[in-house]
Amino acid sequence: MLFLVKQLIYCIYFGFWSLHPFYLSVTEIKYNSVEKTTEIACKMFVNDLEDAIKRGSGTKVDLINSTDKTLTGKQLFEYINKRLKININGTNKLLVYIK
Image (tube, rainbow, N blue to C red; front, side):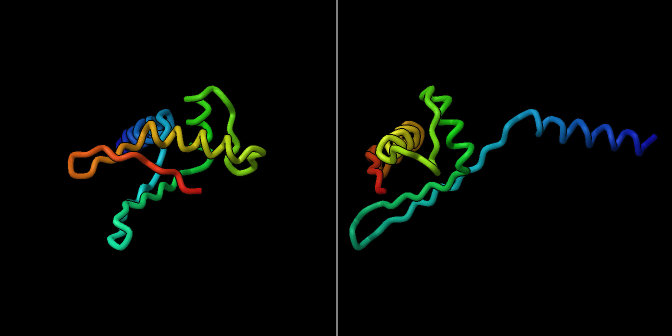
């Protein structure tokens, strides 16, 4: 009986994880004291990022095999710029996209 209860708890616990999508990204922020700039690198799963851009803009995007790199870069920057806000010493900073 205890075995069945453990199995039921296991199924319920891991069943909930499969019902709720899980997205992961890593954002690395470094201060460059020589140039007095803040450098930001965002690492995301491409398929999740493409889906998120599509949901936000209504247009399909292919980050790997893009035929229009300028448009793709614009869509990517707009997505990140809407979601990533940087505030340094009480001042909001504008992001600059470097290709």
